[in-house]
Amino acid sequence: EAGVAQSPRYKIIEKRQSVAFWCNPISGHATLYWYQQILGQGPKLLIQFQNNGVVDDSQLPKDRFSAERLKGVDSTLKIQPAKLEDSAVYLCASSRWTSGSRFGYEQYFGPGTRLTVT
Amino acid sequence: AQSVTQLDSQVPVFEEAPVELRCNYSSSVSVYLFWYVQYPNQGLQLLLKYLSGSTLVESINGFEAEFNKSQTSFHLRKPSVHISDTAEYFCAVSRSIYNQGGKLIFGQGTELSVKP
Image (cartoon, rainbow over all chains, first blue to last red; front, side, top):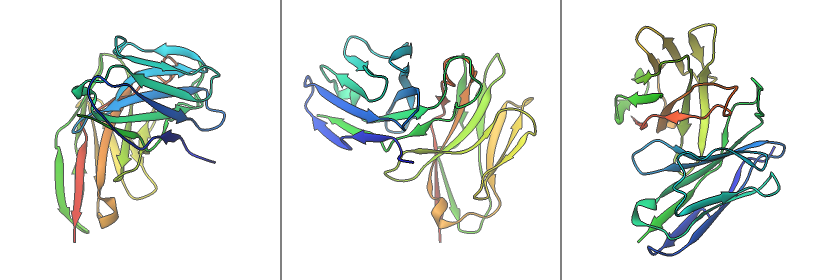
């Protein structure tokens, strides 16, 4: 079974530029998560999708961050415009979980995209 | 709201020595507890989890963790570490696996460095 794929693996941009990250979850996984991991900190959930609907985006800075999962499979996370404090590793994870289920909760993580904003 | 505190940011240890990575959590409701490991340049991998039942849980590579409700702790232990255990370890809690698909709250991480 292929794991969670993310691209690019590394990205360097200047502040005020735009950037997009792509994630392909494990086949059949209904739920997809984007986490932000700043150096020296644990990952923080930005947004959670179930299929193509948003479950939780309470910690997504919506003035500059956006995410979509149009067909309930792949997802993109965009930052526009980027700030210095956005430098971090952006992790994508997926799970089989669906609403009301007590199974399939385990999250499988991709390798992440390391963003450096200069 | 839930929170997680990992009490040590770095733990250096010699090979074959025992190790304990400490994790405390705060929550007003029942939680589920996890340890994840992150090897250099790789994604997070689930090491072990506590959902219910026996308070002592084990991983396939010799780690164990014990859920202590009275002390709100979930410390990770291994009696004898190997060089290959060098990695960052994250403790995480989830309020529910029914709602919000087990949203994870992570601690700050503990860097385990095993020296020969």
